[in-house]
Length: 254
Image (cartoon, rainbow, N blue to C red):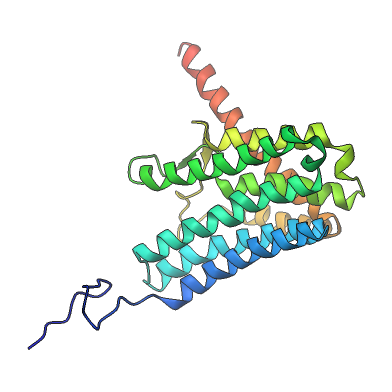
């Protein structure tokens, strides 16, 4: 009697094939499509749509892992697929969007800056995949690629909302691209929020702050591009502030 191979394992010559969980991988595919859509829109000169698609990819990227854990459908295939999707949506896509928007006019310096971002995103994802079991889960090692993408795409979106063209922002666009690139591969710690326990009770003032935050979001909804870029910039600076504070605390005697 033929024995069935373990689930998720394929033996050459066998008629059995490993299963792929469709729900989390469908969400990952949606994130991948959003990144591809952003590239197409940037090539057509529709930069606001391209930048918005990057943020939509961030939403799907945040959902797929949580859905997999909730439905107990984690798999090695899903983890690899998610990483490849991240490389497209948060590595190649932001680099191409800001290149088409502003860096193209800088010649070789422009594509060098865009490539530096793309390469650093790949290096950051590779380091994350290999160090996932040894780093402090409370902090990311370097700027996460989705937040780097939010910084770059958010800048493009905000400038387009103010009707500022990329041709007038060469130096600032280059500085933001290079900053995001090398911060991704740095050792600067960025808070991950993974130690937050949503089942734990919180004080009343925390609920009030959450309500006020929701109200502020509705109030500034007409200025969404500026808000998203500001939040991404604050997070991008937060790691350096925390790192500087820890260095200062070590130098100051107790």
